[in-house]
Length: 139
Image 1 (cartoon, rainbow, N blue to C red):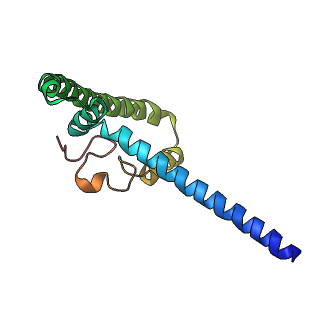
Image 2: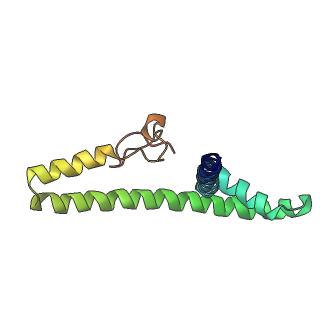
Image 3: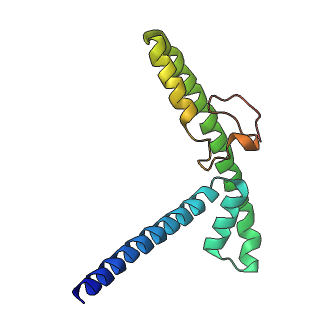
């Protein structure tokens, strides 16, 4: 009888931990998706309108402002990415002469091991640029 109670308590504890872990992961992923949606032109507009929830009358006045800032947000994202790629190329060019061939190989193998740009295994397969800036430009 005593073992049954102990097993029931332990089982309840384990189930609680699993449910807590899964719900925490789900909520974190949901928040990250919402955050990522601000990065796209349409996502920025959608999130802004969803949060503001304007009346029809307000929407006529608000939409041009949101669209303007959405466009600026997208341009800033593109500029940042281009500047970051340039910075990383400069970093690589300055660092490589100071390293051995083995060290360079380790850096290159580490770079190839990283997940694609969007972190879900879909970055370069969708025609996005590679980390070094090569490849098609989707915009």
